[in-house]
Image 1: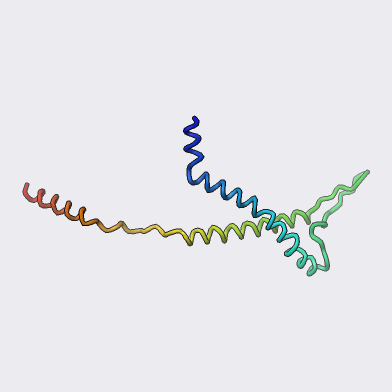
Image 2: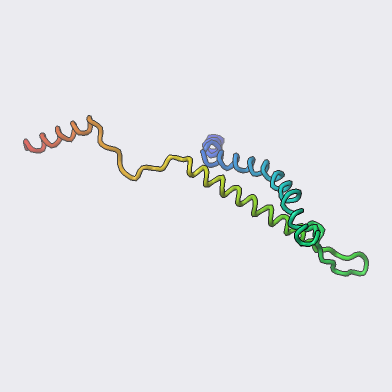
Length: 126
């Protein structure tokens, strides 16, 4: 069972996935800061000074109102879209850097050509 786990853990796909998760976790604070401090303030300014993170709808209750904070959801949605677009660009760049697989078979080597000639000569003598 330990050997099977080693084989599973050392596959290229699992290691690639682990690297992707780590990079995604490291990338999340950058996107959060970008959205909250650079993208949303100008959008809020254009919309008459609205701070999206404070947008909420209150549902009245006998004690305190219950807030549905849809502004926080909008911030999270924009973060997701930016992250998805950045990952799309990253995958596109990686795919462009990889060598394309050749569609044609490689030319036969000189040894293979000689072996075919010998085969054909032996077949013609029969």
